[in-house]
Length: 156
Image (tube, rainbow, N blue to C red; front, side):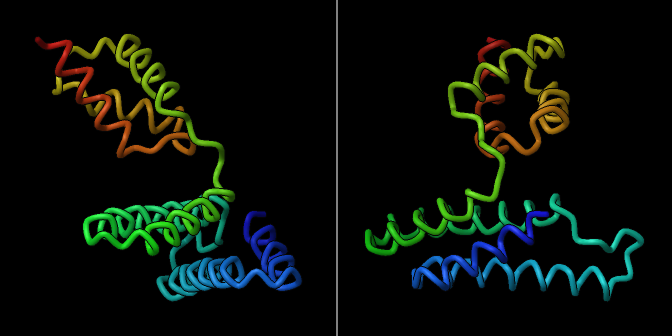
């Protein structure tokens, strides 16, 4: 299970003395524990913490770091940009390998052809197929932009 891997990594980081990795791993485990507690208190029928939920937490943390990177770039704080990039890279270790931009574009073009999408109105069909088939392997923010570009080009 992914949580066990994260806990084992925390032990490794503590032994190696890497303070940045220790801090980030503890932050991740705290977020996971918080989610676990909220599942318990909400009494949802499936209140087990699974890898999918942990990956969602990690994706959310990476997204937060990417937003911070943009803000720090605008404020010309390159030292903080580097720190956030490092944290984002460390978090992405726990996610499945993401498709590169080139791979993502080719997958989107294939899905557009398969779904016979012709205009922006068909975007939801394309995104649905992407989510079903490539859910853990692509960044949907990027995918959305690429789908819009391709569908706008098709309608012209």
